[in-house]
Image 1 (tube, rainbow, N blue to C red):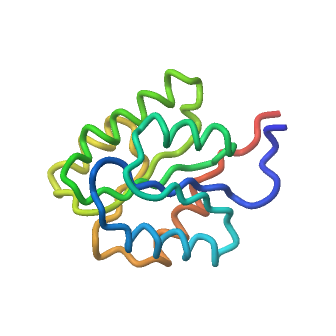
Image 2: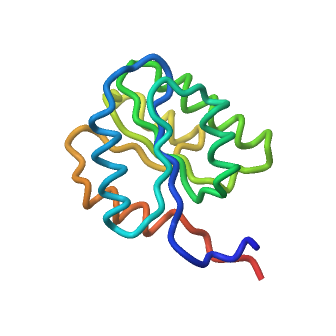
Length: 138
């Protein structure tokens, strides 16, 4: 167990009250097409549900799509829960309508990467592939 074999596993989630999931579905499909295992949680997930899913599914990464403006709170909640549950090795990244001014503070809180609306699916796939797995500990 714990060996980085098999495909990268990514939980793609839409936390909060935001009802628009086209972007999340596009990303989920792109990651899947790139050979990753994607668990799409659907709309209106709480940070607790997202973290539960990631831990149960032995995910390498969590991708959050947030358009509601609540990104600061939601990212922080997911990262805090991962830390509390000794799962801080799960990479958290995200995208959506996130003001430039909020990106650096989010990264300071532990968000690995933020993709703004202009990001291509290819750039996101490449980033996940490059970052989602730390080398296995001996």
